[in-house]
Structures are given as structure tokens and as C-alpha cells.
Amino acid sequence: MFLNTLSESDKTSFLELAHHLAWSSGDVSEREKAVIKSYCDEMQVQDILYDEKKFNLDETLSRISAKKDQRIITLEILALILSEHNLNLDSMYEAEKEVLNAITTHFNITPHLLNVYVEWSKTMLSLARQGESLIEL
Image (cartoon, rainbow, N blue to C red):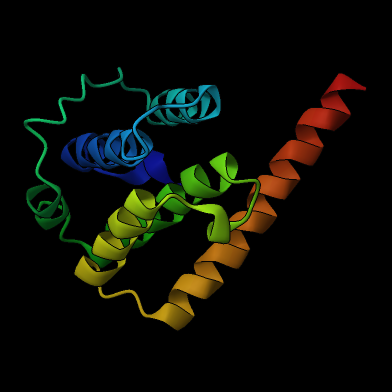
């Protein structure tokens, strides 16, 4: 929703994070692929080639310095997680929890703020699904 406001370098960093999160469970689902494609469409960029062996989570997070961009990226990462887990963070894989924890720690997002972001993301995903259903009627 807000990804188009990111700089080109932050768009790349975001896609690296999204792919890393999607691959952290060992397999990328069709739903995750679709969400990442929608992110690329929104940002008007080509998808990246993710290489797990070259990826460094701390380096990627360190490249994202603006608070506003950190918050946008956190919201969109939550949407990716929640879309895969039917709006329920409790069903996240342990590796996904570790990635989310690294993001929130690095970006200094408090548990309270994370909870607000989660609830907002759930609402937005629910509205998007309702809209898709209305279109298909």
C-alpha cells in the first residue's frame, strides 16, 4: 500500500527481506509468490533474484535508515506473514518468527506498536479479500 514511496534502494532491500522471509520456512508457497508479485507491481520494479547464500539480514536491515521506511517495510512484511498464515501470527514457523524479531528489534518497534501494526494489517488484508470476493460475485 505504501511501498511505492520507498527509494529504489529501499525497494530492493524490502524485496530481499520479503524473499528471505518467504524462504525461511524452507519453501515458498503460491500465496507468498503472489504477494511478492503484487509488491513488485505496486513498486513498479522487476523482482530480484534472491540468493540465500549471499543474503545478510543485518546488512539489509542496516541499509534502511529512515524511520518512515522502516515502518512501511514492517507493515508490508506483516502482511506477507499474515496472508500466509490466515491472519494468525501464532501459526508462524519458528524461522519466520526469528526474521520478524530481527526486523522489529533492528527497527526499534515495541511489542505494543507491533500489535497495532498486526491488527491494522489484519484489517487491511481482510478488506482486500472482501474486495476480491465482491469483484468475483
